[in-house]
Image (cartoon, each protein chain N blue to C red):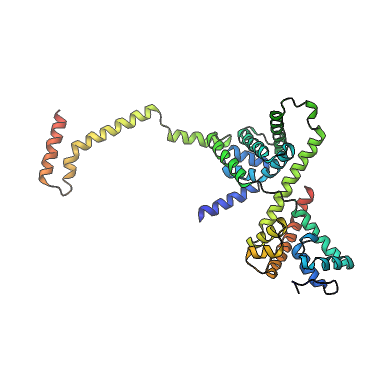
Length: 157
Length: 199
């Protein structure tokens, strides 16, 4: 029946209700083959007009959805937004966290000098102690002898 | 999976924020808030620009400039001093006037729109944005198939046979999907009615 032209006499209330609850209250969205029959049925049956009114109310709300902006435009604006936010310093409550992070990551010159001196001391100490430390492990006596000569020369010179 | 779940929760949190809270989040550098702001306001800003400028290219240029202004000014935004939509409308309107003056350098001041129309436009902007959010929220509650069917038959006004073919289903199946979708929308919008009627 769905593919044939329907007449008002052939359409039942259930069929009308099924169609209008699927397609809404606007006749231009109704299936072409059933449009005339649906129009005639709704005009001759008050309960059908009430159903049509309810569906038309939903249609009017759906129509208030704004058209989505072009995707390319949204993406361009979003790209600019990401750059802009990345280059801006966070405001208000985030500033405290931001400053705290800066303090951890950014060391002062005085701190750099202290760390550097400590590292140098460790390096020299390591060279001097290397033979003794290596004795803890299995190592060739020839290599051991070479290391001792090297450390003696470094220390004495 | 935890990251995407967190992102979804953050998106839901941000989508539910009002405009003032969204501006505050943008000022803190929250990109998701920026995206939400774009999704919420771009359609209507573009609509205003098209109406004032009459062509798509300049309307898009104006819209880009308007949002650039948002990112620049978010840090200075004071909640409660003005409505975001009012400010946004004025920025949009001014940018359109700049572009119109670029076309016609000697645009007389008398050609400026009267203030009373502007107030009505601002109110319409707020209504349109709020209604759009609620409608999209209701549509978002549908299944993917239901959203697709509504999009094709309702918004694109496609013939049933074409919509069914695009979805790879029969017309009977399409009608069944549409029926369930619209019933769900009736329910969703009924629950939002108090908000809708206040808008």
